[in-house]
Image 1: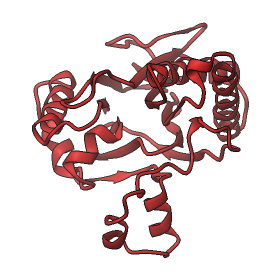
Image 2: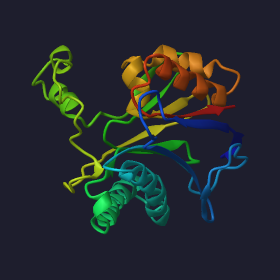
Image 3: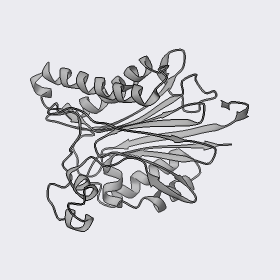
Length: 268
């Protein structure tokens, strides 16, 4: 791929698994190319499209099969909404608006079908731009991590009851872990239709940076400290093998939920 006058390659791979205890998979992921038209991102992209790439992970919830409808709806609708705003000068505002309009469209979809009433989803999205910047948007408790050999950091904040109480200083992390309702979400795409406040952030990428998007089915059984797991995954022969290894680790740890991970890295 071309970035300015230098050449920087982008590798990526994604995998979603039902897990050991769930009857169906309500997770979804998306990888889109923002070129002259909106398109699925190729497995080995050769050039940077004019407005970059969009990577997403979503974890659905709802009755019957509404959860998987909601997550798939989110990764497809957000791509269309953001693509329509891809040339707006304020990238953060474009991302925020795309999240809100997707939220509203998901609620309208639920209202039109009693079997989908109240369906919702988490949504974590990463917009990689050819100028070396990235923007992320986030709702719920899926996560986006960035890092490399020197360590990893979580870019997103879990929008759950427990995480919110810890951030506000109302309880310690140890005390929150004893609460039965700690994982209840304070923000969700769709759902009961509460006003949406997505987390929006910006960063810079360069060769050597790696990124990971995942649902709570990955980090839940493995623990919050994912550094060693990501390092081991990136040491595999390729990212496809790395994603497969991560899913295996989550399943070996009990696999209580659907597991989805999307790995990406920039290589010189």
